[in-house]
Structures are given as structure tokens and as C-alpha cells.
Length: 103
Image (cartoon, rainbow, N blue to C red; front, side, top):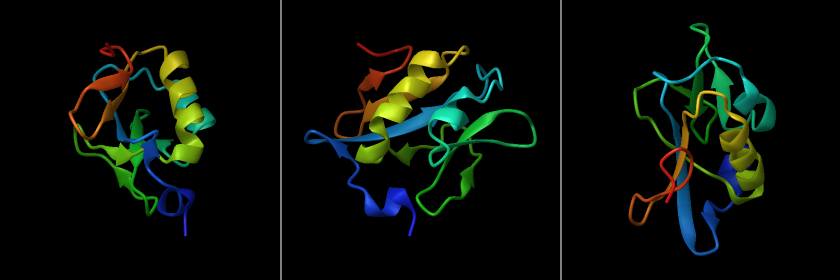
């Protein structure tokens, strides 16, 4: 079982999901360094999110849950991303809570 399968996917009472805008991705791989359980670089040099069973999700706009134990690592990925392409939003209302469009 992976960490994503074992971990709750909520911060406080809010479940979160993350996605990457590949059009803005610079391929630096910082996200994969901070949270390799959530992010991975593909052979095209761009970062993608991974499913709970470690499958690379290459569809545009693909999302994956943010496991609570990895929330800090995901937030650090958002903050350090030079492409400003990582988005974390609440599942309940779709509001971005971390990322370039966060309120």
C-alpha cells in the first residue's frame, strides 16, 4: 500500500486535490524532489501528478488527492515551483487554496 492509500486526504475538514498545468511547467523537478509520492517527471521533461496507486496521470487537468502527511511537502512544492503551475484546491467547492490562483 502506498502512502496515498493509507493517509487521510483532508486538511482540517477539507479534502484537497492537486493538479499541474503542464503548459506552464518548466521541468525543474522541484515538485518531484519535495513530494515524489505525488509528483513525477515524465520523459517529455514535464511534471505530472500520480494516482494513489502510483500511476502517472498524463491527461490535461488530471488531479490526485493530497494525503495529509504529505500536505507540507506539496505546499513547499507549490511555493518553490518556478513555473507557478501547481494548483491545490478544495474538493468541496473547487476553490484554490495554494497556488497561483489561491485567494
